[in-house]
Figure (spheres, one colour):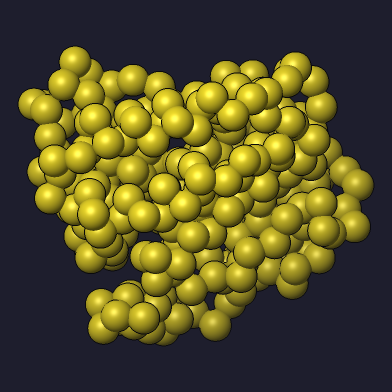
Amino acid sequence: MSALDRVIFDERSDQSDDLTVAIHQPNYLPWIGYFQKIYRCDVFVFLDTVEYTSNSWINRNKIKTPDGWTWLTVPVHGSNGSIADMVIANDSWRNSHEKSLQQNYGKAENFDEINDLFAQAYAKSWESLCELNINLVRKLADRLGLECRFVRSSELDVDASSSERIVRLCTELGADRYFSGTGARSYNDHTQFETADITLEYQSIEHPQYEQRFGDFVSKLSIVDVLMNVGVDGTSDLLHSVTNHE
């Protein structure tokens, strides 16, 4: 762990002795806000037991090209079933994604610093979309020095839905605080969290800006864009600087 990463971890640890849990679907190469949730929590749960949503962040994400943003999409068989059960359709996407990163970021200053991680992932034939996504998120978090325990919801004995599922997962893990995405405001049952004595906090951040290739800044791209443009230390700086406004 670098000196900067140690400062970030120590600062977070000094904020509270409460155990903070964040829960999210295992997305494909997610944006920097996903990793800010990992940075803010002690336990991060990959919610792999919920229904898969076709053409969502679970199987695709955005990178930037000279002509604007474009999708990197992992093809899957069918559209029904849990995220944990989704099977990747073929291997052709691996070469396509690797070429896209080379074509659009090959001349980026930090390409060589981080591309080995993606090259290793694309060198392997994957059957499970969930396994691919979790592998990438965990390796990226490790490269960024994010100290967190990772758990899959399928590893926990929780049979419930919606807000009750989240509360029970948090209870199972001994959570004092749940760090939720803003999109869950409409369905989180605050009473259930209060009854379980779990503090509910929402992620509310402004997207950090950084020097980006190919013209005007585009926000909410994959973490790939951040890493290629500013490197591991620069991305750690951005995670450190993001303030939650909740």
